[in-house]
Length: 319
Image: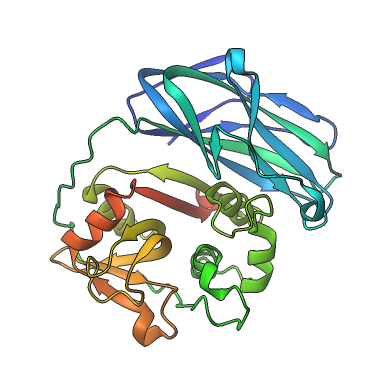
């Protein structure tokens, strides 16, 4: 993945979809930061931001996009635990929870970060930016993997905590499985509290999930994929990944839930035939949650739903 220095004024990006990291951001001595102008050869209409860094309990950092005549739009509002108690109403359109929806295709975007409150603990080290065009057709091509893979990702059920809102914790549960795979000892309740989106009353905000993962020492980002081959390559590199899926009743045989309008799970491997090995947090035990999904049904549920993945690697390994 391309990394852009903080002091670069403009960056020309390759074809879509694309994800880049821009180094730098706000800290205790720099409370506002403008990132380089991003320009693309192909127009895009969706933007997802992936803040990396750490935030103090009282820290509040906003990441904004310049929409020209429409002014500045706050795309991500990242608050510490204390800041979560008074963050106000949900962000207005054009931000749909965690995705900036442009009114039409554009070829450039200007972004900035701003610290509303914070201390020495609040530091933004980089910003991941994902750009894509929803008008591009989705073709689900099924490839064969280079080899079978089964990564030892520890299973965790989203119902393990016995909390009243367990049925909505698929995202933080998947993130904790990835963290534990990389040797980070974190409790589900702690991660869930830190990644919670109080503006929309949900745990599944992609940007806040990667921001919280990064605060535990990982480089984390959201990325859009368009083929099964990309997933096989990631798994072959030894990297489990969180995937966002959607399916109607009967469309994903073997799933611990009958249907979903949006669910996150961990892909941990694949068979020689290309079927996907998954840690599905909706399972109440490893027996029901460690599932092998038939490849055609699975890629329909993932790629047709947008092909969104949450990636994370240890900071020292880069990408």
